[in-house]
Image (cartoon, rainbow, N blue to C red; front, top):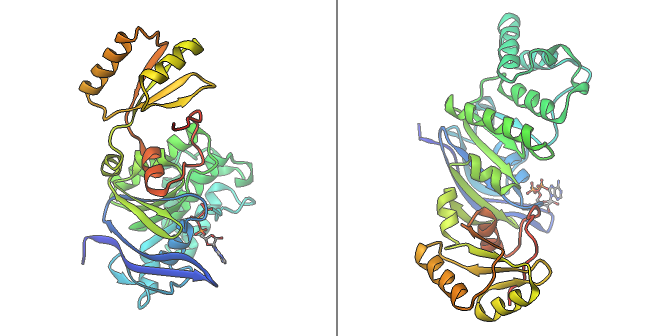
Length: 319
Ligand SMILES: Nc1ncnc2c1ncn2[C@@H]1O[C@H](COP(=O)(O)OP(=O)(O)OP(=O)(O)O)[C@@H](O)[C@H]1O
């Protein structure tokens, strides 16, 4: 038995002329969280659908839970759970009934099924809600129930396809706690997400998928090292101070509207000191100075050449 929960080599998939996965390799170690990160349409869902036996690949060697996916799809299915973007929750059933229905599908037996349903309602903070119809649930509750339903069959590997898309910050945070708990209990999680902070928060390993190709792979820290430095952000109140600073610091990216300069920086104290010296020498009145270490947004930009959709920073143009 290998210690890889998922081992993929040369996975390819096209829809007609459209190449969706262009020969990707993935190694997911048992008991870890692996995040497939990419923008809309990158091929994340397609990869999950293939790995969970829902659709067939055109090419590639794939082992999931130690089983060859082509030769032993039944064994793979028995070892995995999938929570997709489209919920399996039946709105006309109560939360508890949904869980019991799932237990029946897994043939776990009546008593065991009911006990498991109650344990999961407890674990997912749905004890009270468990008696109510799922159609009355909030988005966060529905996602929790959906994940709980995935766990009824005690899978060793769980595929979570964008588990927090559309959730408010608190519900996202709750979901993260639950996902971490699953891994602490020994489950392996393959998680797709468009959210850099989610991959950063949860993943042991991240693979960045763009147009069907893996453009970067590593731990969050390794990926951040791809973008040395980050920047120091200087904000001014007076336009003339901003203009003067732009002359003194020609390497800085400028945003004239918000009077902000971004000076590239390797994050070292030395660089910060020399910047402060230049500011002092030119007697610049800086309203605010902040140091930004690189985050996954920077990585994403560096490896795909495009910003992520949820970048909230003001627009800063390079000179
Ligand atoms: N059944 C299909 N037939 C034709 N094209 C498809 C089909 N399913 C997906 N595609 C295309 O394959 C590409 C990858 O889609 P996929 O859903 O895997 O991306 P994704 O990274 O999961 O994006 P999202 O975040 O929007 O779910 C897209 O261009 C999509 O339009």
